[in-house]
Amino acid sequence: QVHLIESGGGLVQAGGSLRLSCAASRPTFRSQVMGWFRQAPGKEREFVAAITWGIGNTYYADSVKGRFTISRDNAKNTAYLQMDNLKPEDTAVYYCTTTRADYGGSLYCRSTYTYWGQGTQVTVSS
Image 1: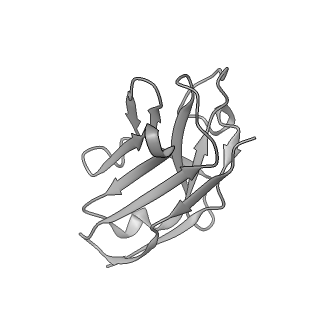
Image 2: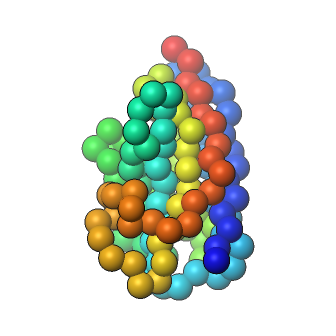
């Protein structure tokens, strides 16, 4: 079992920046993947970004490429999502998630991930 604690959400004006953090309750395996999803009111939860704990390969949704950066600090069991040039359409609850070590499936799919944080609200005003 892994518990994930997100922090860093808030209210920001369009064009501004926020950094989200996600701390895992125990060390992760190199084969695990940490991801961020988001869910806006009335919409499905959607993939934002992911990073492999071992090599650090990164994956992004087209809507955030060039604006968001995912990273991790293995020593702290923590992943980050740096969000720059925020837009009103980025407003959502952002969820941190991680796979099991023996995961299978696409990293862009919600069903690939096993453990989820409680979510943190990000609101971008125009």
